[in-house]
Amino acid sequence: MKQGKVILADIHQNMLGGVRNLLESMFEEVFMVADEASLIEAAKKLSPDLIVADLSLPVSKDVNVVRRLKKTYPGIKLIILSIHDEGTAVGECLVAGASGFVLKRTAVNDLIPAIETVMKGEIYMSPSVVQTSKNFSGDAKGEKT
Image (cartoon, rainbow, N blue to C red; front, side):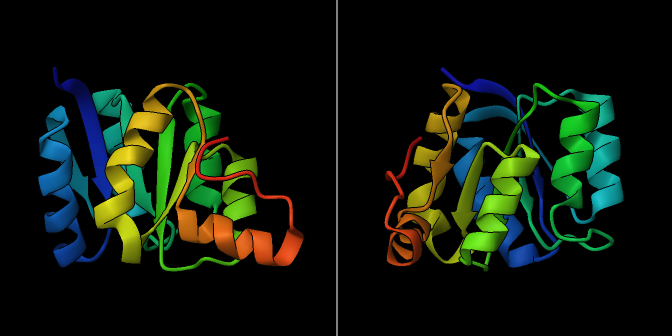
């Protein structure tokens, strides 16, 4: 059974198209936007069940989009897509309230498990992010937390 609404926010049209195909199999409605202002407006109008957003949306200053969305919609589930796998970017997003962090280079394999995990109320990180974190801190727990 398909879930409700999802908003996909990314400036790259190729990424939008590929991810949309994945999301259409899981959600009744998939909406796409290409910048932070459009994302905030769409979230306000649509009350989505999930937002999947690029960390580097235009106008955004890194995790500001995460903070703005979580401040306005504290219950929203939010997965961040990013090319960055540094622990700082991941940690800032999770502290700001993101429910998941998926690397763009592994999105084809990681996005569906991320959505399933996040929709159950758990936190998800791409396995390669977890591996990078283990190399630096030694205390990463795995894909789900």
